[in-house]
Amino acid sequence: MNTLTLKPGREKAVLRHHPWIFSGAIQSLSGQPALGETVAVHDAEGRFLAQAAYSPESQIRARIWNWDATAPIDRNFFKSRLANAIGLREQWIDRTQTTAYRLVHGESDGLPGLVVDRYGDALVVQITSAGAEAWRGEILSLLEDLLAPQAVYERSDVTVRTLEGLPERTGLLSGALPPQPMPITENGLSYQVDLVGGQKTGFYLDQRDNRQKCREIARGKSVLNCFAYTGGFTLAALAGGAESVVSIDSSAEALEAARQNVALNGLPEERCEWIVGDAFHELRTLRDKAAQFDLIILDPPKFAPTAAQARKAARGYKDINLLGFKLLRPGGTLMTYSCSGGIDAAFFQKIVADAALDAGVDARLLYHLGQAPDHPTNLAFPEGTYLKGLVVNRDE
Ligand code: SAH
Image 1 (cartoon, rainbow, N blue to C red):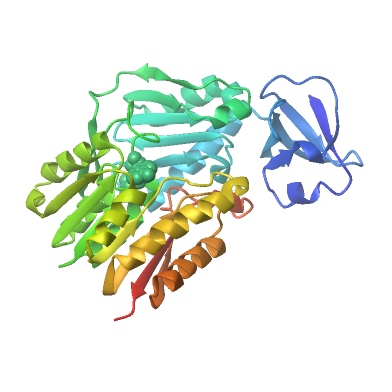
Image 2 (cartoon, rainbow, N blue to C red):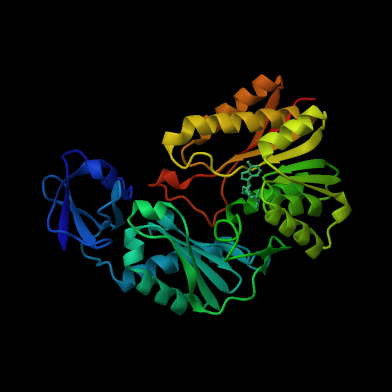
């Protein structure tokens, strides 16, 4: 096995079990490991620290598999990590109410660069690291053994793969997919999900618990669901007894799916209004009409994938939250989210506070929300917490 030796002092993060080794931390490398090959990580004194997957082109030059020189990185290693990840979901997901959830959440499940989502009996995999790519055959064969899925479909159509020197890749890997879109259940509500053509791996599974929270507080309310996608929060609000729901999204296709999802559940279609358009524009139009809502959900796409884009992203968040506060009736509730890894919880809260101030609104923070437990965070890898939600009440 080749050895990657760190510069003096750069072993600290590794000893704290952070899984990433950046190119700048490396002193030397023996040999020329291939893309994704396992290397031994040593400190500057030559002491063993960890085993990691080498990625010659990435800034994240190696991703750690384990911190144990005696446990080889082999089929058994992956079997045990996958079994752990699956076991956690068995413990935390009520599978009588929910058939779609994340089985493997990358670094947070000790499997850097691997995401596996379950949609009924079908699996969607996303591979975003050279290491996971090198082990794809073994991983897929283990998923077959452990879960006997009806189909495994790959959605590695994400640009981060290019940072690892990997081409984007999609397609059926095994079995036969049910006709798409296919039905899934989340907290007892049905949604049609398109694993092949949908956004992400088909559905924003991470918002499951927050949709449930929305359902709990929606009774009798006029609701604005901005960035609605296929109606996750729209259906939750209607199921919770909302009086009306306006849903905005730039994707006509997503809103058409949302409309069908409302009908699929026998929810009151006459309480729905659908607006296809750019949220920044549509929220202004609503403001100019002096529209007011009791409950507003703002769930925009990732404005800042990394810290470098945070400043520009902050302006985007500020803008929509400012408009959100202006559209919020006194006494009303704002559920506002950021899924940007580049913006941490404290910064997001500050942006929302600034937006309230500029809108001339006094408001109380009631809940901090996050991603559902099938998207856990490894305590050693705080970057795993990416979804931040705030539930804020405007004063009467
Ligand atoms: N809340 C949704 C997920 C939202 S994902 C759920 O629970 O499932 C973000 C959504 O924002 C996507 O559907 C995307 O189509 C939409 N979107 C992206 N940019 C937009 C814009 N400028 N205006 C309106 N919608 C936008």
